[in-house]
Length: 120
Image (cartoon, rainbow, N blue to C red; front, side):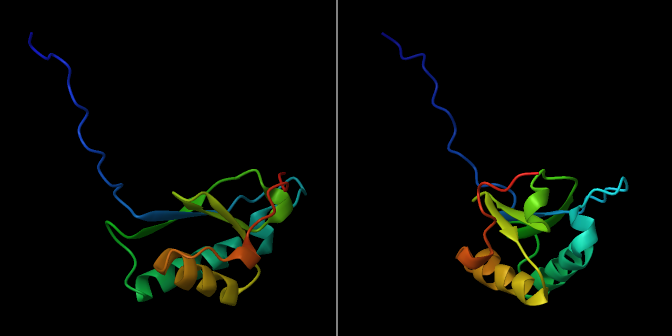
């Protein structure tokens, strides 16, 4: 009897090791949003720090802009994948810690994690 089954190819690693997405949503209807809490400056800082640390590029880290991530109550918000770790941050020191600890060394910054119950 001939074996006609096929074996799936081995999983290939993703193009990037990690992605960090920053909510940059700006609600103009008077509702609070991440853009009102320095999200663009944090995104810019993260991008700069990732590049300075030699973490940017294929096989490394990608810093991305995102629209509303629907966790406004915890804003400003960023999320790191593939770990699906949600962060709330307030200043450059927080961004620097996320870059150094999580994006560079794979260690979650527990003190900056967004509480799981916080949504919109």
